[in-house]
Structure formats: C-alpha cells, structure tokens
Image 1 (cartoon, helix red, strand yellow):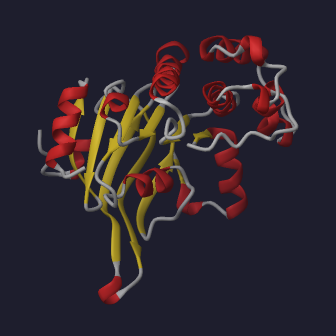
Image 2 (cartoon, rainbow, N blue to C red):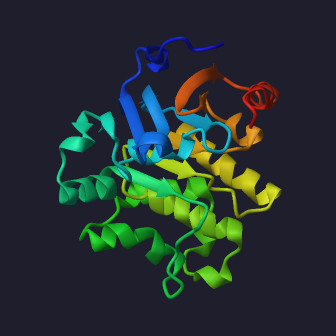
Length: 254
C-alpha cells in the first residue's frame, strides 16, 4: 500500500506514546543541504511494536533520534505523550529521556565493574530512585536473565549482555523504548532470541517499542512496519510477513 498523505501514518483509536508532526531535519545549506527528514508525520501507538526500515540514508535513524529527543528537528514538532520536546529546556529534556524513554543500541554499554543487576538498576540509582520490585521481577523473568544477575559483563555472552541492556531500558517503566539495530553485533541465532524478548516485552509487559532495523525477519515481528525513502514515509505494512517486508524494501533499493 503506497502512502499518498502523511496523515495516513496516524494510528486511529490508539493513544500515541510518541509522535512527530511535520518533522523536517536538514543538514548543511544551499547546494550541500541534505534533507534527512522531509515533512514526516507519524504516531507510535501505545502498546504497539513499530519497525522502521529503509535504504541507507533514508532517514530511519534520524527519525528515531528526533522522536526520542536525542536530536532536534529543524522544524515541526516531536512529542512523548503530550509533552512537546521542543518546548523543554536541556535539563528537562534530559530528565524526560531518563524517566520516560528507554534506549537499546547495538553497543551494550554495560559498565564492566558492575554486575548485571547493578547495570540494570544504574539509571534509577543515578536518579535516586528504586525499581518497582514487582515490575523488575516481571522484566527479569520475561527477558530471561534471572540466573545471571550477579555476573559481570565479561562473564556474559553477547546475547546475555544485550538482554541486560533491554532490561535496563525497561526497568524504569518507560512510556516507550527505542531500539536502533539492537542485534547488529550478535550472530543470527542470538539476535533472533533478543528480538523474541523484545516482542515479549510488548506482548507480556504492554511495552511500546520502536525498532530501527535493516533486517526483514526482525521487522516481521512488529505490528507495523514503516518504510522511509529520501526522508519521507513512503509505505507501511500492518501485520507484516518477512517476505512482504523483504519484497518492499527491495523495491525501495535497500
């Protein structure tokens, strides 16, 4: 299904955990200007798993970074819930990201001197808060790291380290989790397991997840896949299959 209007990316009857309205992101000026985002409007529905795909340079990571408050839009608006990110001071934006947004990246970013449970709790510890014990137990059980909590990163496999990073992202009960190529440093079997854990976080914990990926099989686990091209959303698929995603991304030149 081709998208003729950006308003088609609004998820009807679903509360938006995050959204971007007429988002533009430009780098440079004049002849060297690059339009990484060119008028994107999109909602990320609460409790939904959305994947973002597109060829290299299509704007998929830029969209995630702007939606998550990691980068500023040149024009337009980005919201987490009802909070407009552009209206916040740098301090308030930092607090919002800490308290309401979870992040998972290719790099695990675990501190080598801390155990898994200490790494998992670190953002809350720095904020002077404690995790809800019942919620933390749910997260640890869902992610499957209960028997590794006392181990340091060098005692964990890559997949186990990424599970700890996912649990860390979920520990504060964020409104939304953004994951940028979280399986990029993992082998295919371990990567598949990590993606299953992310899917379980949506199904079992009611989490909202936005995943940037180049992998059709990963995107097929989502409820919806958005396809970007030249800084615009050009298509979307609901309840995707790996074959449908692969065929569409091939058409886009990815």
